[in-house]
Length: 301
Image (cartoon, rainbow, N blue to C red; front, side, top):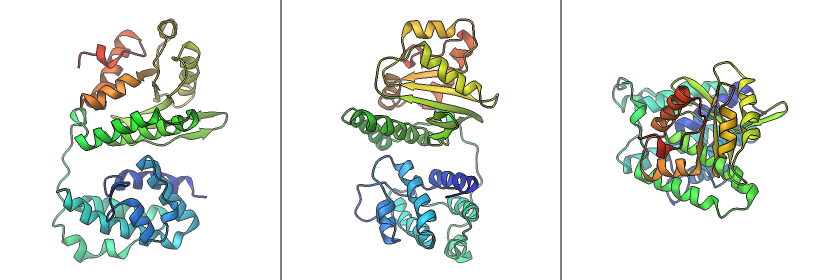
């Protein structure tokens, strides 16, 4: 089993490698093709891409560690072709970041450290601070996630919940929010987390069932308040929230949650609105009114 440090490095590697290759739909350059070339094709499981990358890297390290170098090299080689074809070639800073992460899982790959290879990129470009508040998804990515959201409705109830968590991870990753998959603490399950402007948000995700009421909001609020004082919570309920539950939750306590429903998610994708802008507006409205849930359609974005 990986150490906590190695598990964190795997999460960081998944964030970095996410845009290197597609998860499927290509017979020349894709993660499953790179995995097969490295002899670990059986560790790639179709579905949400980021969880599949984490699974691939983790299983390779735990069960076929001798193949890890070949896997990373295969991913980079194919990405050089794939990304150039997309007019978005691999950048020197991405390779530098990869080289800085690999020692965290006890690897250094000579091919990626070769001075001739690194010099072929020219000098690293200075990093300019990016304004994430205006970030939007590409049309292809928005279409991919919209399709995935619609396809979840066709699954059985148990599969829907897992796929919904994967969808949220991909959505958060698309906006650079550094998502972490679900994790279990003693006596409780957290569906994931992400970071927004240095603030950590814990995530509760519900796909099916009735609208969320007071009891579920209080339970999740208790989980959040039991963590570090700077933690906040995002409750995502595809079915929405009851009016009575929201009113009761707002009375007599300061909210540490903001909420989103399925229509919020669909509108982010269909209207090409930045998820970060939506979350910021929900934060501000919660601070002003103590209301955990204000629909995106009422935020005047």
